[in-house]
Amino acid sequence: MVASPRKRLVCLAFAAIPTVMAPSGLTEAESGGNQQTTESVAPEDAHRRDELNAARQLAASGRIEAAASGYRRILTADPASFDAHFELALILISQQKLDEARGQLVDAVNLRPENGPAYIRLAQVALQLDDMVVAEKALTAARRIDPQEASVRYTLGRVYEKLGKDEP
Image 1 (tube, rainbow, N blue to C red):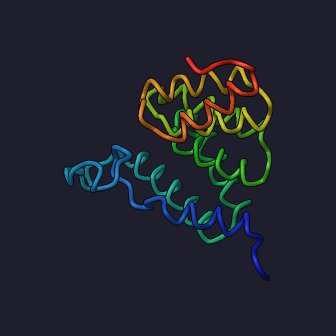
Image 2: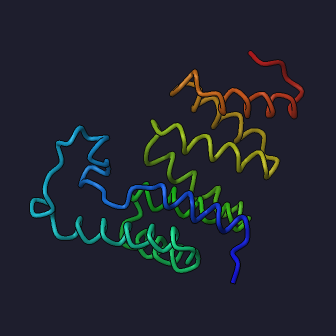
């Protein structure tokens, strides 16, 4: 069976997500190599990390529904999992389940208000749903985090155009 272009894109996106994460949620490169060993991680944290990695591997291999189910199980046990909210949102976006994706992204930005990519995705989904108020607020937050991010400026320009506003 040949995968659709959208499904191939989702698989490629998830293949790019590191599957071996440090207890801090950072890859070894991001943490500067100062990771704790698995032995020093609480068993429940190691189990959650393993579940997250399993969901990522399912998504990367094209088993999107199974991955979405895995992320939902993680969120049932740990509603504060930023990664599960954000990565489930990516799957939902690929399935055009934009209202549900928006909810997951709102949860993600509430958990990590310093995460620019989550705000950018929220804005993109809000733009597709023609919710310019949410899109503008999300992009304003993303611009505050990273004023040089080109996708923020571009998408904010699209929002201002739809709102009939001049860029401030």
